[in-house]
Image (cartoon, rainbow, N blue to C red; front, side):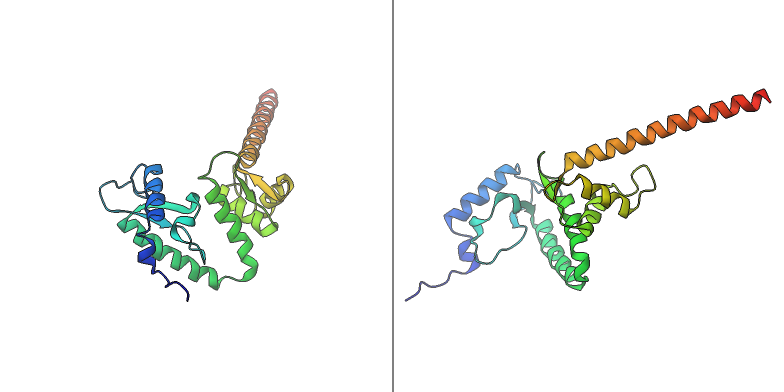
Length: 193
């Protein structure tokens, strides 16, 4: 005979979850990761539920300390996001993945890479990281092509994206200096006339 199935609230009483919960609260300095509240009741939020996993079996990188109000809002936001994604044309999902992956990568340590599967993923990465319109009238197409060229093994690091931004700034500054020098020469020629 199979063992009776535990309710979710019973699983949250399990010592393994209590230990994991304390580890997450400690990691986050006993404060809400969203608003910084240290005085309200704190919850450990599962960024996503995965079928078949017990609460304590999740990786710490998708567990977040949130106050009661932010936890409630996060649950509602997850539901809203799921509803909007369900309404998206399947061809736009890669773009959403690129955008969300780039935002998520910003909170990780150096060396984290963003998956770059195709052109639409590259557009999402470019939009989320600010490469579109960065110091120039860059289009999504131009930025996406640069990301695709720079992505090795279908991944790109935030460090590579920052280097691309620096290169754009350097090129823009060089162009500015050339334009200023040309303008001075034109002014000198005009004065000579």
